[in-house]
Image (cartoon, rainbow over all chains, first blue to last red; front, side, top):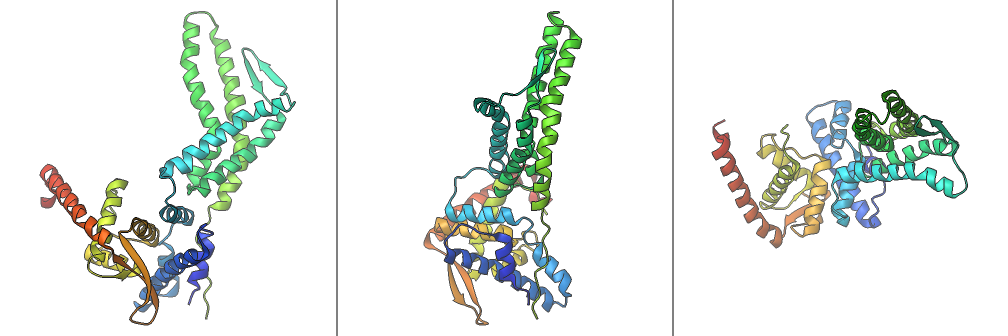
Length: 228
Length: 112
């Protein structure tokens, strides 16, 4: 018989409830999986498909953990999307874009590479911190029950927000060009520099942290150990 | 598998659970099996959808779970409808009856 209790305990992790209640929940879930596999085995199915069938009962253990915690603790009724995408995304964005100012306050002033009309921040301490910020954002999303897609979205949220801002700025820049106050090549060059400096390069730096965390937490369910 | 708005899905899941428990105490696996059997497989509860809902209903005081030994001697957590849950079931049934009537008037779903 597979050790379903150990399997559920391992997958569900700590629920943050009192140990008695936590153990009850794990037992109950394990019993359900045991019943299901016994029923299928009784129907003559071989062991491997029986196990698969039982494992399909829970596609995302982290999400189940969050749902149980919400049910048990009556946590603030935020929508799942808000908790797993928007909240960690906004925090990641704030961390990424506020960090240069915080570093500046600590006396680490960024050398600014200037392009016509637009400064690019190639600020080494900031760039080096972006993978960590992206990784923390992705991890935060995962802890809130986010899917691998949510984790990536949250991890690169700072550059997605900046892209949206640049898209908003673009028509205003074109209006300036139309009024002939600024030359078009200058505006295009500034936008290209901004895209490179505030979207593409930081985006790559964020992904360096996001991808390993997303891969590490995108665990496929493994079959539990079968005991004789 | 039907894709239904999550509020409707949640509401229908609550009704399904309360309705089967109104017939007598059942443990989680039995609840899932009974719902699946009665709805001929249209409604299915897996571990991920069943237990968070049961715990939520328990927190609300609509159901209560008690560990008891079953017929084969194995201890199970049997869920029963409480007086509050029983009281809640009647208006819930009425709401869904009205909902289906309205939907039927609109889309003639019962003739589909």
